[in-house]
Amino acid sequence: MDGAPLTHARAWVHDAIALLEQEATRSADTHLLRLDFPGFPGIPFYLKDEASHPTGSLKHRLARSLFLYALCNARLSRGQTVVDASSGSTAISEAWFARLLGLPFIAVMPACTAPQKIAAVQALGGVCDLVEDPLAVHARAAEHAANGACHLDQFGLAERATDWRGNNNIAESILGQLRREPQPVPAWIVCGVGTGGTSATIGRYLRYRRLETRLCVAEPAGSAYVHGWPTRNRDAVASQPTLIEGIGRPRVEPGVLFEVVDAVIDVEDAASIAAALLLEDLLGARYGGSSGTHFVACLQLAVAMRERGETGSIVMLLCDCGSRYQQTLFDPGWRAAHGIDVAPWQQALGAALAAGRLTPPHAPA
Ligand SMILES: *Cc1c(COP(=O)(O)O)cnc(C)c1O
Image (cartoon, rainbow, N blue to C red):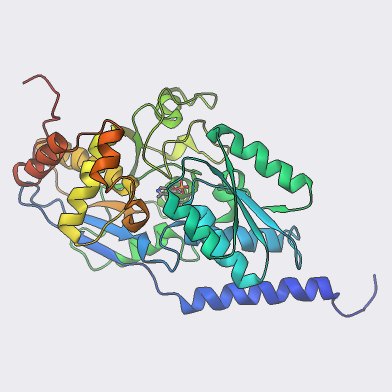
């Protein structure tokens, strides 16, 4: 032990943490929007607009936490390359924070990632390493880490990098914004599962605050989570791919906490995309496919509440902005090429808002 002043290396870590804290202080909280529908009296919907972060998605929170976690664990130093595996949104946010800290960044992404997301990472100075097999992204990121890069490891660390008891995590933010509403403790909060970080944070926070709110995970039909949750099977894999980015992982990621989730609703891609189009009509802005998935699940929960004569608020996340999907989900030609017909679902979902009942298009009459 000696009383020598901080090393240059340690001083850089302190400066980097100060830059992250300045960024957090400059940022405002994201809006909690409210929608009321004639078919669901006494069941207001609240939508947490995570697209309004500077990098356009809820991954802004995660990227800030992952950089802080790497710095405070002494895993990240001046000039070190940073790497992560990402379906896109995380990579955009991480590239943005890497630029803030003056660090090179590599995003390992599936080659099928929306082209606008790839362009966004590159515009922020990041390098995209595209791999054909979406399951191979983890191994490729580990290779970069073996060569000296700092692996931010969203899939391994999202669940622990966020302060689940508070520090303005997403759950604390939502409940604070509801405090003057007629039903400030929601009946349900709905989210999806990518890293599992958001659902873990919300589920833990609800228990910590001793609230009666239940947590519903909305996922693309056939995802690993949908198969794994009922029996808590961590070895489950997806039975079909999904067009919805950010959720519907092909495997159960290490950060997933099945236990804190009260219900799982699976949603087919055509319904999710139709719901994203409906959200554009309702809100005047485009949000991504996972927001559509969440909206379909909210409608199903609201229908069930209405049938039981219950009232109560329902909260869902608007996870990212829709401009990223202009050439994919929002392009009729792209949808047709992928065999997606949204019209029947648009009709069914639109009717549900008025009637309080949801009849899936292909259900027997
Ligand atoms: C990451 C992501 C999610 C899921 O959030 P996690 O906290 O990673 O489980 C949902 N939607 C989009 C668009 C995402 O990028």
